[in-house]
Amino acid sequence: MNKKVVVIGGGIAGLSAGIYALKNGFAVDLYEKNSVPGGECTGWDRQGYHIDNCIHWLTGCRGEDELNQIWRDLGALDDGVSIYREPYFYRLIMDGNTLHFWSDTERARREFMDLAPEDEDEINRFFDCVKYAECVRVPCEKSLAEMNPIEYLRFGMTMAGMGRVIREYGEDSVDDLAGHFRNPHVREMMRCYMNGSYKAVALLSSYGFYSSGTAGIPMGGSVGMVRRIAARFEAMGGKLHMGMAAKHIEIRDHLAQTVTFSDGSAVSCDAVICAADTAVTFGGLIAADHMDRKLRKMYETPGGYKTASGFQAAFGIIGDADCGVESGSTVFSCDRFRVGRQEPGHMGMRVYDYDPDLFPADRRVIQCNILQDAEDYEYWRQLYGDRERYQAEKHRIAEEMRSRLEKNFPLLKDRLILLDSYSPMTFTKWCGAYKGAYMSFFEQKGHKSLTVKNRVRGLRNVFLASQWLSTNGGLPMAVTSGKFAAQSLANLYKHMT
Ligand SMILES: Cc1cc2nc3c(=O)[nH]c(=O)nc-3n(C[C@H](O)[C@H](O)[C@H](O)COP(=O)(O)OP(=O)(O)OC[C@H]3O[C@@H](n4cnc5c(N)ncnc54)[C@H](O)[C@@H]3O)c2cc1C
Image (cartoon, rainbow, N blue to C red; front, side):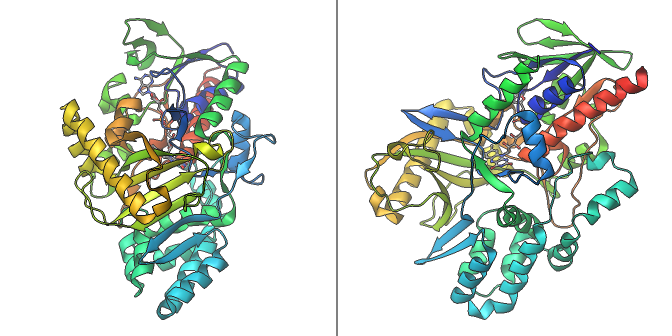
């Protein structure tokens, strides 16, 4: 076809859009503002250790998943990429006891029953529903926003088990779910991982990804996966332009004509796929009045659609001796300390030791995380204005984290090197993330999940690809949004020829 498409943004959505546009016969130039592709799906090296920022779990790791085919189309997964499967979703250590959300839900059910027999009925109800939630799928053929009512119904019927989950927990927030249990450890287990105002169904379906076996971690981590995708893009003839921040899309007669960049250069094109964060896209690349009604609703209803981020610190473990912590995600109760506007009494941590190339025995890494919300983001944004205080505060929190790790896991004493600490502002600076968000908007109790069309109001040849086109976001939403944007692009030219 030889039509020239410009993709703005080299995260997972942009790379996916680029590859599917190439498959559809377009010539593709992808422009990314950073020096490496990947966006939020990234990692970096410090003092000989590797920090993997993103993939805690990748949905679509089972061969039979439709999503698996998309990852294969992109070169992210293939038969040569082995997958690590964690034995549990997360665990909570509290008052000397540990509860796990084992991938084997029957094992978890037994563990919960042993600790909290007083909650037998609720425990059974919960684990039954996790099994039902295993049917959750991400639409891979067509965006939900593009489906007609019959397609929508058919897709819904492939997830029949969710009917039961929604009947049982559809009205509940995570806090409501926790409130069904009498045992304090079980209650805390339910609400220590996500913001308490999020829908309980989000917790059940995330756990369902683990228990169904679709969640896994590809060897090579986030950076390895992005490199494989970028290599596929280039091998197919796509051109990657790094260090190029798009500034504006020039429009004439409802058509994008030219993209200008902050270095003053410009390129003309037949179509544009905007794969930057949608706050960047509608914050200057194109005028905000082109924004879809549903997307606008999410930005303008902060009580109904919330974002989540975190403050993190990464520590390298000195030596290869036992350090008393196991791989995977752990939350443990600890002395309260201030992070942003919160004063949490527990801390999340994750041990990275499962990939012998990224984390050899003497190069294991622990990352600590405290959830931060949109209000915390404002705190960090203001503090960032005074760079010295910002750095000092990051350092203070990282040291608080270190002391709690050492207190709770004594074998770590004097064996932790602080590698890096990063706040919600880090993600805004790195890739323009709205409110430093890790994923997109999470719908709150009483508010619907939404999917946004990838066409831009009033512009014929501009399309969107981004995790922000669906509530909950994440890698599956980013990668499918890229495929769907390329589909809409191909449809446009099919109708024009
Ligand atoms: C700490 C963390 C952990 C996560 N863990 C998981 C996980 O375990 N599983 C999961 O499924 N998801 C996870 N996610 C979410 C996942 O990383 C994101 O959903 C996904 O990477 C978003 O992809 P995207 O392409 O939509 O957006 P982005 O990654 O934001 O990509 C947008 C790209 O556009 C570029 N850009 C911005 N402005 C411009 C401009 N003006 N010109 C050119 N380029 C521009 C940015 O630099 C960026 O590269 C995690 C995210 C974080 C931050």
